[in-house]
Image (spheres, rainbow, N blue to C red):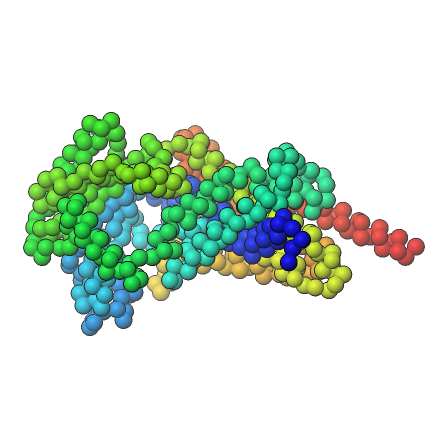
Amino acid sequence: MFPNFRLAMAWLHTWFGLVLGFVLMVVFFFGALSVFDREIDRWAIPASRFAPQPMPSFDRMLKPIFAGMQPNKENVALLQGRVDGPIPERFDTVRSWGAYTTHRDPVLGIFANYEVPGAKDPEEGVWGTRTIDPRSGAALPDDRLKIGSQFFYPLHYSLNLNWMSLGTWIVGFAALTMLAALVSGVVMHRKIFREFFTFRPKKATQRSALDLHNMTGVVALPFHFFFAFTGLVIFAGIYFPVGPTQLNPLHELHEKLEAQETGLPHERAGVAAPLASVDAMVGEAQRRWRDKGMGGEVGFLSLQHVGDANGYVSVYRAGTDRIALVGEGIHFKASTGALLREDPPQSAVDSVNEFLTGLHLQHFRHWLLRWFYVLGGLAGCVCIATGFVFFVEKRKKQHARQGIQGVRTVDALAVTTVTGMLVAALGMLIANRLLPDSLPAGWPARGDLERYAFWAGWTLALVHALWRSAPVAQGRSNPAWREQCVAVAGLAVLAVALNWLTTGDHLWKTLGAGYWPVAGVDLFLLAGAGIAVLAARKLRRRTAGQAAGAGLARETLHA
């Protein structure tokens, strides 16, 4: 089929990269934003603009809040058809309570899981969640969307397509294909060291795009390979499921045997029991961590089988002083506070897995390394975007002569994926600042409207890219690239201005106070606006050069 192995790898690299590059562009860009997802949350929710807080007292603050919780209405609605008889109005049997925070979280996320009476599946549970101010225990409005951690972050690994985990499967397939594209790219580019130092921006678009594609691919090659691989490792449980398959009985048996070995009960005893002081258990866990030379704050607090004699409390260390995603869990009997188990040192395999997972999820405090993650993700975006440009530039004149429309479609999709994605994200931030705190009765929730703004912005970008793509079929550039760059610049500046007008937190104020979460988002937006302006000017000059060249060719022909 191919004269040699290198040409086979070139075909593989080109078509795998093109078909799944649209998905990988989303993965890389929103993965880069997710490095600072908590900071974006603070920008989007002004009520959360205060310093990060430690885990508050369970006995004094969290216990009364948990006791007053019930499942979220939207989660209860999902039980339709999955319960024999009517859905209960109240859920009284609590399976678990939990609270989670990080060194970057000013607010505290808490959740509770309840048994569902009459559920067709005995394992069926229903969740209740709440976000609170850990300083006072006051609940933040439920309709406020945490744009960074609840939208951008899951978008990068699931495309927010949650039905049957469809988005996670698509991203997993794209990551697997990316590994093949990286290997085939190395085979294609035999002079890889020279291409690391080769970039000719003043050459023709096709040449400069290929140079930049090669350079960004080589610079961030270890980064790209590592994150594609570890992403597959993290979601191995979805790609190779055990529970929903014929191995389910074996899986259940393993959980029961593990419960016997660890002393952490797998099921409820059915006997009511009080809850001892959880604060005392937390204090004991911190003392044990200090004795190991690992003093730190609590990152995750979990209570299983709440109100039952088999109930137990698990206290996990935040572990932000190391890369490996470790919890150093210590477990206590809920009714007495007696120590049940202290997690032993991990095996070699588990240690490697936790290190790789921690390096991917970056829960550590190393700010410089976090910025390297952002640059690596953006380098991936540049690599993919220039690959699109090179593909179109290489073929558009040939397709124009043959009257083929394929490259026109590819170019429109590339515009939508690269600049259209930015338009959508900025539209969401602008909607976040423009929507009022309280909406009229009957309107969708505020967070839903912000999601609609995102998808509407992306749809408009697609329509615009297709509408303006006619020049591509004639061998020229699509003006939508430049026009959407201008839109990105304007929307980014507008988002910064609206943050100032609606909250009073302008740049001079946030920079003067050293409040980097909000100042950093504003500066990132302004930097993006500046890059978009430069790109628009560059594209305008190239378009003008093409028009001049076409005019000169016509004059020569007439002469």
